[in-house]
Image (tube, rainbow, N blue to C red):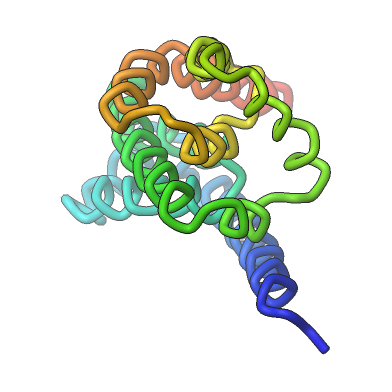
Length: 199
C-alpha cells in the first residue's frame, strides 16, 4: 500500500518528467519557428505575449524552485533567450529569490518530511550533515549560494531546519544569488548559442 510520502514523490517525479517534456517541445517549437534563431521572430514573440510573458515566467521560476517541474538551468537559459541578458537575468533573479524564500518558509513550517518528499534520498543523505556544522552553517550556506556548485534549492530547504532568521536568510539570498545566477544562466546561454552556430 502506497504511503502519502510515496505518492507525493511519484507526483513530483511525474511532474518533473512532464515539465521536462514540455520544455523540450517548446525548444523544438522555438527552433522551428525561428524564435531562438532570429532576433526579429523572438521580438515578435515577446510582443505577442505582452505583459503576461514576464509575469508567467517569474511564476514558473518560483514554482520550479519549490517543485522541480523544470530543470533550473533550462529555465534560466530560457529567460535570457526570451527576454535578453538584462531582463532575463532580472526575471530569473526575482523568481528564484521569491521561490527560495517560500521554500525556506515551507521547510521551517513542515520540517524534515517536507524536504524528504521533494528531494532524492541520495541528495538528502549527501547534504544533511551540513546541519552538524552548527553556527558555521550560515557561512557554508552563504558560500554555497554565492558559488554555483551546490543544489541551492535543497540548501534553502535545509536552512529552514536551522535557527537561521528570516532576515539573515533573505539577506544571503538577495546578496549571494546574483553572482551565481549570472555565471550560471549566461554561461549556459553562451554554450547553447555556440552549439546553435555549430548546427
